[in-house]
Image 1 (spheres, rainbow, N blue to C red):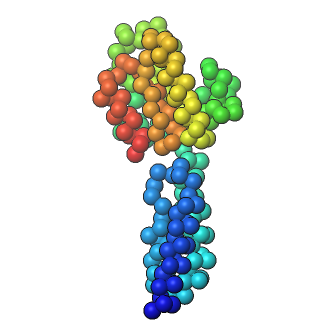
Image 2 (image 1 turned 90 degrees about the vertical axis):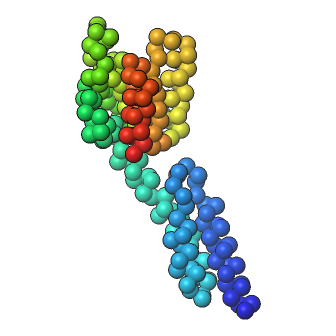
Image 3 (image 1 turned 60 degrees about the horizontal axis):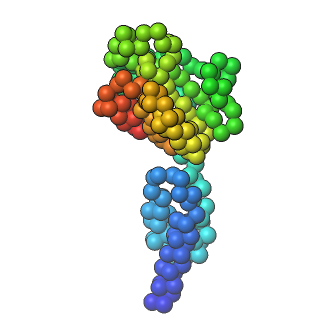
Length: 197
């Protein structure tokens, strides 16, 4: 009885250590249940405790891979599939990005502009083809902190220049969608919902 109690206590400590090791940036729950199944069934808790910490890095790997493979073009593909009124206007490069931010330290790693046919041509007459008012843009960052910093900056610009109003949403931690204020709030939040996936 005492040996069983000690074995269960060792497994509990191993699982607690594994749970504390997560970075906190992944919004998915820790994969402790997968680690507990073999540990609970094995009477030799020493081997289960030794292998439990090794499971923590693999649970973070899918998130890193997902963020690494997502760029503005793939985000737009998901958007256009769900919202047929959206079309690609421009895929920016470091050379032609009007903000001169693409690829620079702590800035977006990819960016596209899109148009939305629900916006009346008369409302955007004379504006550049890639103007946010014509639809919006998608900016993808390397880290959640960079995306949040850009969001904060955009919101400060909007407060200072009310004519620059737009909808801004960070989704999937690293994707900033900027949508025209000429869309209704319902239309704009629907774009956010699609990219939240």
